[in-house]
Figure 1 (cartoon, rainbow, N blue to C red):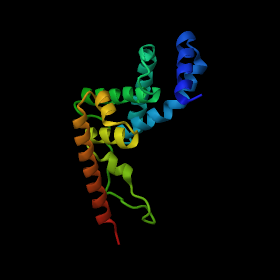
Figure 2: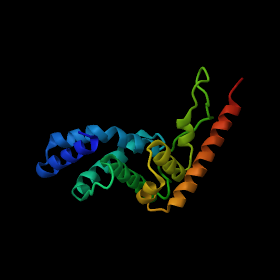
Figure 3: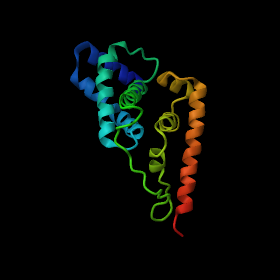
Length: 181
């Protein structure tokens, strides 16, 4: 069986009898991906990411009977997580009051200079740019899918991604330039 077929069977079992084992299997199969997405959206703030992921699962369970299978189950739940994150940002005045991520002087290279510290550079991006970059480059969503998830135009997704990548490149270059010799 494929993941999609497994998901369909588990969802059917859960919906027909509120089968706890079926739900746990769904949760185990997708919780790490949903949490990872939430963590990246929240700039690495674990408590905020846990809240976003938990609310996404609560909503997913409530909305599961109306899921139409036009996308993968994980994609759908991650879309719910994105919406939860956006709603929280809006409720707090476009990010004011959200836990901040301290972005120290970029340490562009670890000990041996072999690895770029991308997570700090990504966390330092403006929230909207980070959102598009993560959805496209990390999660693999197409611009069309992102447009549908975020209710924006495809062109907006493309331009935001371009800006995010440029900002990320600039941050990484600054980090390299500051690297002690």
